[in-house]
Image 1 (cartoon, rainbow, N blue to C red):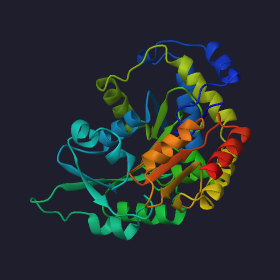
Image 2: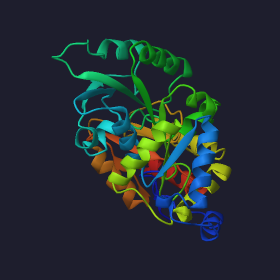
Image 3: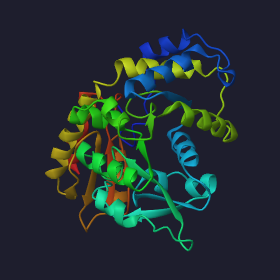
Image 4: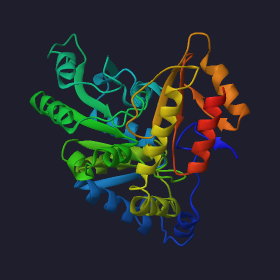
Length: 338
């Protein structure tokens, strides 16, 4: 038994999801003729109470397309310094949009309205034009931490007052919605654009959705094409997204429960110096000074548990739908034995 806790991207389609994919009606999506893609896009837009959506192969692409639509070359984008759009998208903000980044020191990946306000450049020809704020919910490097809706509302008010756009990297947004008991529509009312991954907690093999206004998505569709993201019979993959939205959202609570079990075990282990608060499906812990993250990862691997060293002293575990209670119990025993 291999327990793969490296990421929630390692999941494989369930038999029922595969069946839905095999039976999907398809067409040429670049011509707008794939009924499964069209259904997924309409479904996602309606879920968030927004006008339109665009199916992309990856979360990185949906974020980067969104940022490109919102900005002009030479603009400045505000985000937390641990944000995925800055840390893990290959310098895409600079490469794709020609924009630069203003980094904020948030709390576990979450920034405040006051921080955003103070980071906005004045209307001065010497300064880059601040045009966009990007939030991440849940925050990956924050241990799957979630924003309070009140904080997002305050940030949106700053954006409205300062004529800025607000984009959400919601790669794991459904984890936040389930954990907080919130609705997709509540978030749709607060952001100008939202990117949601289908290939993480929801268990699809590929895919992400960019959601916004009809005018925004029309521009985004052109940019997706330029980025090489125009797919043909993409309905086979979109069908997985439809199935996931209908069947895999509420079950995310199980992953959150499993994450807390592992966090509790780590809190009692001999090699753990501290564990970030667990809110969703991500567990990040610090190893003691006499150990290294690489060493612990290797010891876990020897016991059939895969993890990722997030830094020389931090390790990340991510729970997902391929992890059973038996696997969690095995991991708890391994943690206790190291």
